Image (cartoon, rainbow, N blue to C red; front, top):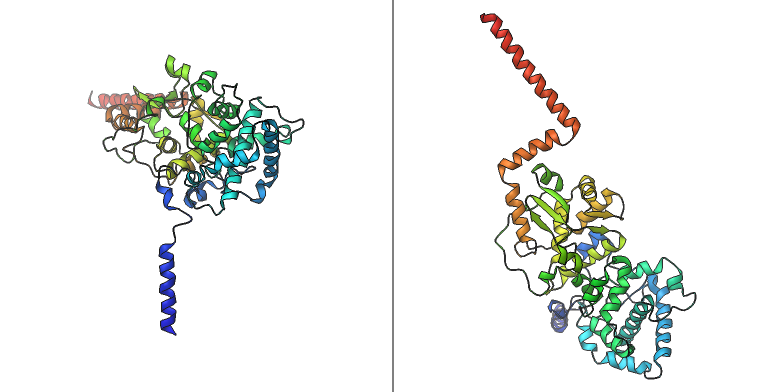
Length: 437
């Protein structure tokens, strides 16, 4: 009996040897894989920031109870699209066009999708066409139906802006491009990226120059598209060179930096940057001053930052700009006092909550993320700030000024102490003088 049990166990082990990984597929380590389940460690810190709230896109959250309401409207939007294009297209054309890239689309997901071919392609067509119709309707290329609840109810679209940019809630960008090329008006010169940026501009508020500049920009999916548009122009095409080793404690909190005479102020950029739009990722250090562009922290930006960091942590061929920026902010901000200083300097526009809530969000954003100090895009800045900070002479002088001259009351206290010290010395002198005279 024991021998039979052992034989069965050996057979089961042989079967497992042949089974490919399901929850983290072998394709997850390839550059082509770009849509991931967020690691549990990040979920424990940031909660459900990576899951859709009202609309599911792609197969990972399909069928969940809280997204079924909008799921019904996807079919309504697809039906309207078919009615508009029925002169030259039918539903089979949409499915066939996506079917040709099914294998490539499946490889974009970090886990094996437990759907047959028909169901998987249905998801691609239904969700892809729904996104495109939303883009066209918001751009007023296609009118909303009268009393369409998606636009009539003011709470829905703001959730779309966030849900369309969640890492677990994506379909491959090339699927969107195929469906867009199939359904676009041949007389229109509007690109897919232009429609996408116009849609998200309702919460990102970029200039017309920016929108024109991103007309031909592409990405792995919508999250990657918007993320790429915010990368500094100089870093778009080449990875940063390897830097010299940097001390582990590279940036102190704002309170400590100020005691060392290091200031922070808003970076407005030069003429060219103002024309092209200055990303909040561009940070500089000049003459003892850290210069940072203004960043607006609200519900949309907080969700977007969290998902960009998660994407960079998972994708093997992705730069780590947002991870670096998140770590940088985490170093700068310890308490609500640091946030207040950034708000006073117009570096942070806070529409998120109290200063304490912003500090908590930033600290969670940079927690437990893999970060290579030596190769990050802010490596030079970290070195420069560290070297300036450890210069003893100006640190001591700055600390003295911060302690005794940072406010009128501290100055008055220091002056009173100095007067008392002088009077004590004079009293001692006259006492000794009288004794010896």
